[in-house]
Image (cartoon, rainbow, N blue to C red):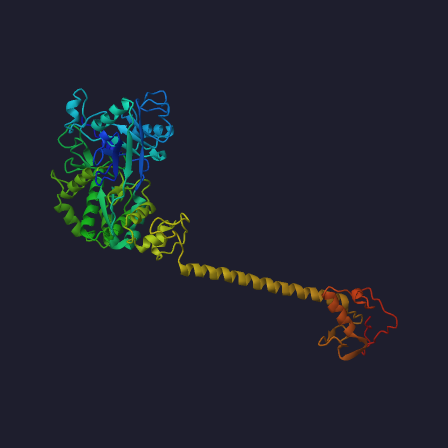
Length: 576
């Protein structure tokens, strides 16, 4: 009974990305001159590590005659044989095989290597020079790719793969204990005033969801200064044996096994199938063909956003009503898209589909083998597929003097979408306070109006705080004055008579009289008491001024010699 395997394509998906166009690196041999070759040596660049774009590495080569699958390098034979052979910096050369490329390069990095050359030990079957000279070595049909095994994030040095016929020439010189000096260089793709960027993905890929959901506004802001192309990663079922073979691929494929996708939920009986993924992929390709000719395709972005909001669930992924509503909200003609899907060859019959064939061919030509893959100016973007990474890569792809304003304003801003949607105002701050490499302008600066507004708010806060503090000091001073008045001018209203319990003091001049309520309080000069009060408030005591008058405290009345109490007209208690 045929076995239906949901993981048939997973090995392909776990490989790597290697764009053959354009070549952005070069490998030259300077010593010995007999190995110098115009245009350099053919090679393949690793998909891990960090290439030094715009720079180069020129060092002597050290060949380690082992598989380099362990860190014990010094136990291996090293050529050329010299005591200082492994003193950094150097470029290490090692044979391919027995462990992953990442393992070899990591061990070389730990030993101090500045870069690594992997020497292939197998001829390509199409190589008419290598195969005849190695009749006992089985050739390989497909070109090897220096893929990341999933652990290469710690690799910081670059590495190349050399084909067997060229690697053998270099090894032969090294094995004779002669020096070989190699230069590895990298160049940026030729930029212009318009950047091209693309994404290879499928509708069920969760790694690309954040980018697809959030990049719409940025794509609109870039406008015609950037051209986007979405691609769908469709597997060729013919290469996997799903057409006319013994393996039945079932609902993973359409068109009788021609176009396939992995089962997103790994359940062949229920849920979303690979064929469902192919159908939605074709729909999105048709939407782009119909509405994305300007390189912006806002309807396409709107549809993807609506689909994520409404239909990106197990129960609604294939729900036609949900899909129709998403297209309606994105202002897409459903009839036009259905016509495109049918006229391209459909998905149900034993025929080819022109649109899906184009995608498979483009993926093969560009060497796309990992899902998802984003490219800018035909160069794959390494690192996480995030909105910020792609935006920064796009902004770095412009020629000098052609960088869009939005790149100058928002590159490096921690709140990218907010910056783009608020006319370049970076409210979130900058990732780095250093000068930007994009246009040579500071990154993450806030706009002048926003800065002035913040300064006004701060100034207003200080002014308000100062005014409050001033009022508080005034209140405290008044309380202090009242306390001193109560201390030096006690009121003793023993009878509680009308008008006798309160006193009014006229302080318009220091020599004024002190009046009771309704009569002259003669016999007591208030000028002396006011002077005494002023002196006390000002921090000068009566003793310091030489006055014979002493403070009068409530409840402790001291009467100077010759003092006669003043009797009020209403027979109230005398003032003492």
